Amino acid sequence: MKFLDNYLKKRIKELDEHPELNKNGKISQEQAEKCFKYFVVFLLLATFIILAIHVSIYGGALIFPPLM
Picture 1 (tube, rainbow, N blue to C red):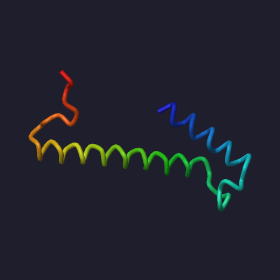
Picture 2: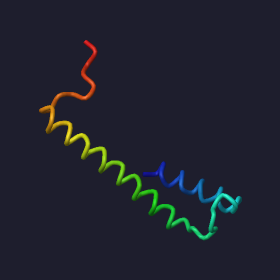
Picture 3: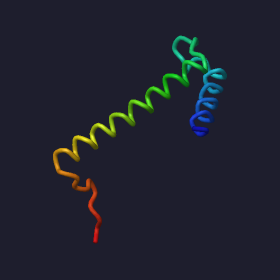
Picture 4: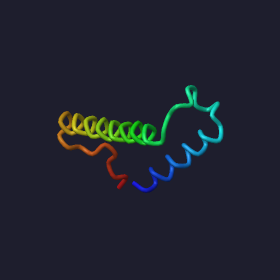
């Protein structure tokens, strides 16, 4: 997840340069990484749950069937 680390480092640098972007100005890099990683995990989990519900209802039918 190197892209994630690079993005977070860039975002933390922006917040350090412009503290007005951060309301309380007290977020650390570790807290930002933790929040972002929880968000990504939650998004993936929600996607798999919705996919499992779809498969159980439609019996394995493809969400996007092939065009031909």
